[in-house]
Image 1 (cartoon, rainbow, N blue to C red):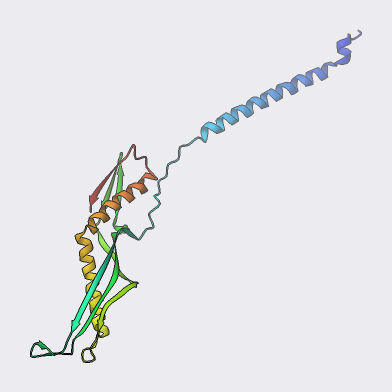
Image 2 (image 1 turned 90 degrees about the vertical axis):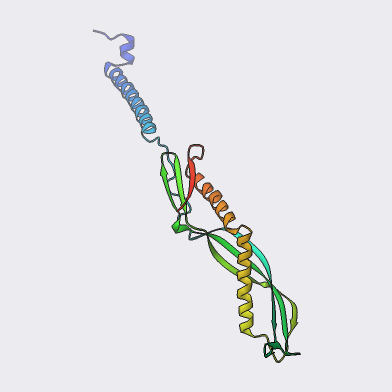
Amino acid sequence: FPMNQQEQHNPPHIVHNLKNIVLIALVLVLAIAVVGLGFKVSHTTESKTTKLGFEDIGEFATQSAYCTEVSATANARKLFGHNLPFTQSNIVFSYDVVIKAGYDFSAITWDVKDTTITVKLPEVKVLSNEVKEDSFKVYVEDQNIFTPYTLEDNNDAVKNLKEDALNTAVENGLYENARTNAETLLTTFFASAYDMNEYTIVFQDS
């Protein structure tokens, strides 16, 4: 039997192959869409920082005090408990002293339970008490050859000066300010890992 005009231009096997190609292409497109959708769903996660960024801190200085202390030393040779005339030395000088207070960070502990972060702080301590060498000023230097101002005298004077500076700093709230600043700084640290709208921080003495 003679073939019609359409069959002459499109033999049956070619038409069948075209249908298979189109069907395979549709299946591949559908498979890619499903796999792509599955990938997005299975890998969508919500991350949360669990390691805080201050775990390697050693000394945790939270307050500094700057004091200018004056030392006055008067030495004289004595006889029967009285100063001998013309044997007295007078030295008056000052140093700036820098005192830092804070905590041993390894002694700070914290615990997270539900939405409460409990932080236990040890006792505040003095981390350093240093004189600034470049702040040295001399007001009076009247030395007598019979009673010279010795290195030992100077060391004792500087030691007393540092003790006076510490006492002054403590009397003016050194430890209280160190505690307040510690709470502020630690709250900032915890805020980097926890939502402070959801969590409450409680500070306690250890």
